Amino acid sequence: MGASSNEEKRLLFLLAYIILQCKALAFNPGDFLIYLINMENKINLENIIAEGAIIIDVRTAGEYKNGHIKGSLNIPLSEIENAMSWLIKDVPIVLVCESGNRSGKAKDILETNGYKKVYNAGSWNNLGEIKAGGCPVK
Image (cartoon, rainbow, N blue to C red; front, side, top):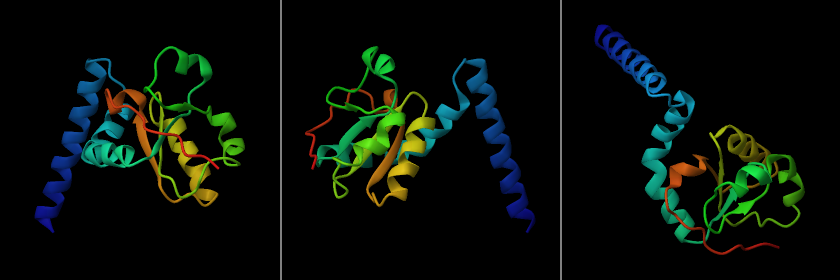
């Protein structure tokens, strides 16, 4: 029991240290945590995209216009429910936004409506120079 407690303390200390470093570097700690979570999945996401997933950017049209992943679709979060009329449930969907918050909400909406292959990639910048493939729709 003592070893487990010490391990938990070390992990909490490490997490606190990372958050403080993020703040010192003016980096959003939430975005960084999503980055850490997705770091392991990044190669997986790249493969999923390469195999035909669509990338949906749920930011506003203005945000999208200022920069986005080439080939991604812009469907603002407020319009995601309308898009379900033409999105194919069997095609993997990778969601992005500015920080991962709106893409997380979009993921919840899609999964609640039967979409199974939905991934929150967090910030659109997390995927680097990746390019989206085709756009399979109904």
